[in-house]
Amino acid sequence: LKDLDPKQTTRFWHSFVAGGIAGGVNVYVNNFADVVKTRMQNQRVIAGQQPMYSSSLDCLRKIVRNEGFLALWNGSTARVA
Image 1 (spheres, helix red, strand yellow):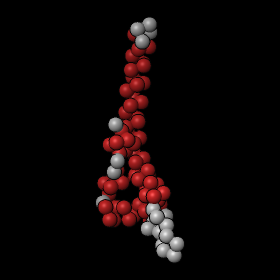
Image 2 (cartoon, one colour; image 1 turned 180 degrees about the vertical axis):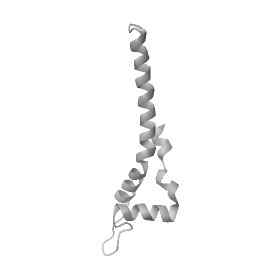
Image 3 (cartoon, helix red, strand yellow; image 1 turned 60 degrees about the horizontal axis):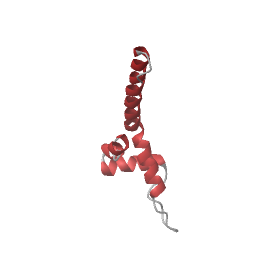
Image 4 (tube, helix red, strand yellow; image 1 turned 45 degrees about the vertical axis):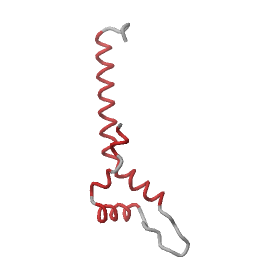
């Protein structure tokens, strides 16, 4: 960075900070979908029994109803760190 002129260094830091902010915002905007996807992938399907979730929308509804709206953001802090 010391070989760059000051304008380029400033642009680098602006891009670096903007990228960090965008990454953090992305986690919080998309985490609910990741929680639903993970629950769908980890559900146990036993022959002769109905699975816990029949679709992604059903999974979303059950999480909100049984655990509360904020449960959709479980684990988001670990993704940001």
